[in-house]
Image 1: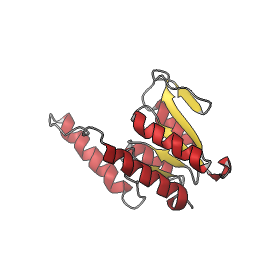
Image 2: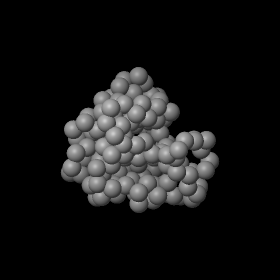
Image 3: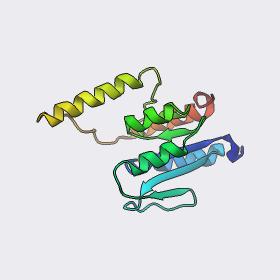
Image 4: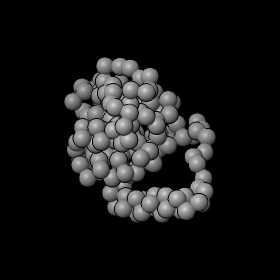
Amino acid sequence: MTTAANGRVLIDADACPRSALEIARALCEEKGWRCVTFASYHHQLHGEDHVVVDAGPQAVDMKLANEAGAGDIVVTQDIGLAALVLGKRSRAVTPHGSVFDAERIAFQLEERNEKARFRRGGGRTRGPSARTQEDDQRFADALRWLMEEGGRG
């Protein structure tokens, strides 16, 4: 096994499905990476590498963004947080296994803003579908790839 000096996986645990959290912890243990979770005090998460923050809006995102650095991998569903950490040369992946790309993040932010504008005008957008075993496998594959190859740089 390698040492924890390999890197860190930082998890926005406020909205991370439990199965994805367990997959990330297992891969970090296997690869010798440090797994750090961030959540507001409303969530019942514990561990030596768990950071508890205030329950204010965006508190978890801001703490995680401030902690992230080059080479870290961030697990989040939040496109805004992904954009912040990509700017710090971290990598970002959703719990569904979609890797955020610096070349596409501006488009994703604009798409998010358009959907929010639509909802503010009374429109409805689809919520996320139920989590599947395929989601777990896609996440595990994407995180493993980032840890082994894609996370370099």
